[in-house]
Image (cartoon, rainbow, N blue to C red; front, side):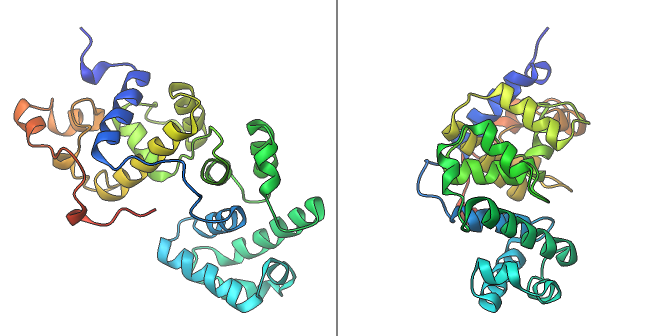
Length: 253
């Protein structure tokens, strides 16, 4: 007998999208939050780094060197010092400079707007070929800035997909990109909402340690909940909040 907990991965992905679409504010394909170049470089800075420390590193970098040409030409150790609030500044500084130099050499200026006209696969390959640019970073730039039908899989999306059963427990983040994209419509708006809602959910409810399962609207079909709490009772489901309450914390954009 098929139950909510034994539903297929594709069905769980659909349920996840629908439940979180009700739980969190739905998003629209509005003007990007940051320019393409800022999104690209900020995402490089953000690896294993808090949002506040990423922003501080970015601001110090531009305050110190003025513009992208200044960053690219800066003595590397000075750039390392400017972005010292990030997790691995010694690795990120030369990568950022190599990315900037390659963009300037290939395009003649520090811009990414040309990706608007490129097919998704070509744009993804071009970005992924840059040093230190993985699928997550390339997908963030292409989805947020150019509304391409791609799916960024960060640690939150990856963790929730594994716990719920949308992907196998040992699937890598790169494999999760492939599996989840195959289960979702090739629609940038759907993919944006799926990404952001799971990102928020990982930040605010489905923590790495001690997830707040009582507040979670996914408990009726989540493998992790079943394993740790047993099948969700009618009482547990009825007690689940219907939507996110801003009193619980601000949702980061």
